[in-house]
Structure formats: structure tokens, C-alpha cells
Image (spheres, rainbow over the protein chains, first blue to last red):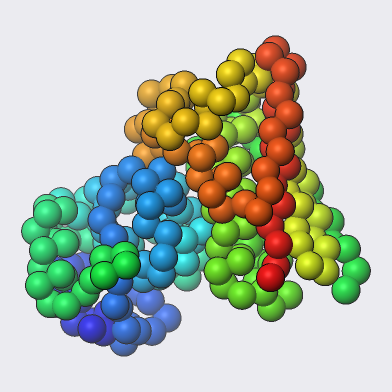
Length: 116
Length: 140
């Protein structure tokens, strides 16, 4: 599914544009614990959903080659986090959906988890 | 290819800038054309070690040596040391402070994950003096 379709499905607001809003998103992960993202979600997750809004979410995304970070529960990070995401070329968006629902919407539309 | 050396200072309790050393190393490894999976393994291992030095040891030093067929990443700190390395290697065991947990870390996955990503991991530690992690990642 392309990224613009994901934005529509999540009724999300894009805070940092992707260089390619039509990029294909096949795999995603959802976590508030960055330790788990690094230890367990290590394979080609193009999108990460999280409720944690600090700079280390962007750092973790960068290390994991995650291209898109979705902040759930309507959370919006401060300007410094958005600036960091811009520098690292990571797309950032926010959705009012809670984590469970946001993951469910994407999964129902065909985006898979690690190893599926 | 000549050996490339990189050095970075890791500042203690700096949750804003922690990861910049790993980010720069990741870029340097990507630039020489390594496969993304190798670059990612090195980046994850170094980032976990960089965070450990920042969280547990009031910072430290990261030294990276890129050889033609492997990279050596050394993270040295002068923190409290690890009293029981076997215990520290157990998934889930952690002494991280609350601030680290609030940032999404401190789940006791750092050292086990470094070991998982690395082709070789050496831990030299002395209680009261500090710790050096030496991580080796092979390119093929």
C-alpha cells in the first residue's frame, strides 16, 4: 500500500513529509518500548507506530531503517523532534487513533508484521 | 581500502543527542557500499552500546575502525562497571534508572541485543573503574 493511502486510512496529519509520499509500505511494527523495537522488530519495518514522543523514537527509527513514524493517540512531538526527523529524512505523522485501532486498520488493509 | 578511524565523545544523560555517534557511523558504513543488513547490525549494536554509556556511565568514548572486511566498534566508559556480566547478559535484567525507561529503554535488552547483532563481542569491565565493549561486525 502506498504511504498516501496509509495517511487516509489513519486519518493522519503529516507533520514531516516523506521525500516520496507514494513509497510502498508493506511491513510495520507498533511499540512504545524502543528496546523491543531494536531487539525484536529488526526486519525491514518501513513504518513504526508509537505513542512515545521523544527524540530517541526518531533515532531508533533511523538505526532500524524505518522510513515512517506514526504517533498514535493524537500525540504530537515538539519542534526539535520534528526537525531531527527532517534531518534524518523520516516521515512523521500523527493519528488520533489509539495504538490497537491504528495497527488494526493497517493490518486489515494488508500491511503485515515482521516475518508474516 | 585504507582503514578509516572515527572517534566520538558520548555525553552522559544526554537523551537528546545520544545516537549521533551511531548515526554518523551508520552513514560512513553506508557510504562504502556495504549491504544494508550489515550496516543495520552495526548501527543497532553501536546504538545500544552508546545508550548504555550515556545512561549508566555518565558518558564515554566511541572509537570505530573500519577495515576492508570488518568494523571494530569500541565503547569505553569510566562508569560503575558491571558486577556480574552473566546476569547483565540475561534478557530482561536491567539497572536502568526511571528516566531511561521513560525514554523507551532500560528493558534489559541492550547487551543481549548487542551480542545478537555482533559477530564477536568482548566485554572488559571492572567495578568502580568502567567498561569497554568491543564489537566486531564482519562485512560478509
